[in-house]
Image (cartoon, rainbow, N blue to C red; front, top):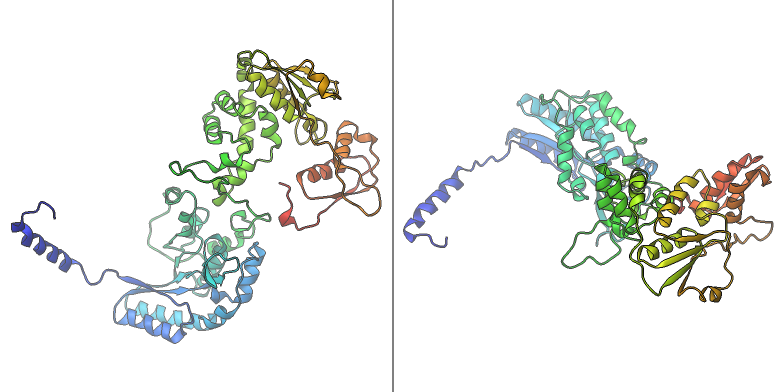
Length: 524
């Protein structure tokens, strides 16, 4: 009111009073009645009857998954991988029962019909479960989102069948972009959503949902399609979106402290051990600018072909798309950039201005040695790389099976390194570092992880996996493994060993033995 002439104050007060008086006492023509927490059926019906007969409101009754029964709910969640969600049967026994709900809903539907009002149910009023991992400072919390969707939709389909499709169903409980279209086409609407917009993307998800519904007919509600509703339920077990992954998804939170003034950082980049500028090269690849994308990659990563094929892609674990459907295939996009930009970028690769007084020897021609040589040469240091074997690539070339990565891909990364002027001496094992220091100012040891581990068997002979894979890649016909092979372990190397063993002549069966469950296997 600053600057207002006191003489006009009464006029503003009069306008405010008139505005308030113009607001109708009846702000809505419909209402939804909740039924949770053990409210008796007769009380639910009395409240609804009052709202219908005395207030003339279109009335919806909230129906909960407890109507499905404890056994149904427990079996459904367990089958979809939500066995860790804990609850007992007390809500199922205390809340509205199926046998009481059906006749009550029919009476209320008839009552509304006689008065020209709409009647329906709201599914669902979420689902109470136990606080089992200190998620909240309480003993009970409400489940929502995609775990609730199978229960909500099952209840909707069952009620639709009981009423021949003539019961209106207002829907919530896990609706999102993956289900919204099917729900509308089945006649299950209006639909409300909350959980989906609490995830990465937020309210922008409504834009995607709106696009999916642009051509949905705007006709008046004509009933629920029993066939379409049933088909939605039947599709749940085969749909990965509603099934909990066998392996837990790694935390997408950044491992570093968020800066005070710059709170935005792409989690994928922080998940990468060398913090590549992933968003930048993804945008370049998406625009078809492969040379530019490969330039961005090679600023920090001199092995785009190797890492674009077999890197452990920790960046994808951090991708925020995991909270929606699945991560962006970052590693595949890196390989796409490498393949698309290699021929254009290679002739333009140059070493840095020469640094006087420094000569470096790198011992070991695997990924570590090649990377060290690349960066040193790019910085202008004269570099010689010594490799004991007849080709560069280390474990990647000599051990990892060819069905995982081709020699051509490894050769391309070697060419990128050599474009920096690195001198390479193959078939040259190094036994004396001091001898190298006679001619070089610096020596980098990058001899790899060739030392053998052991399974610790109490008896019998074991074959080291690195030795096996190396022999299987070089001369598989020379291996005599017998018909049955056991691979001990559950990591990526063990998967390589199992697949390689199946290709060895004479092998008929390969078994993987791991000390824990599949859920905790470290293999991708």
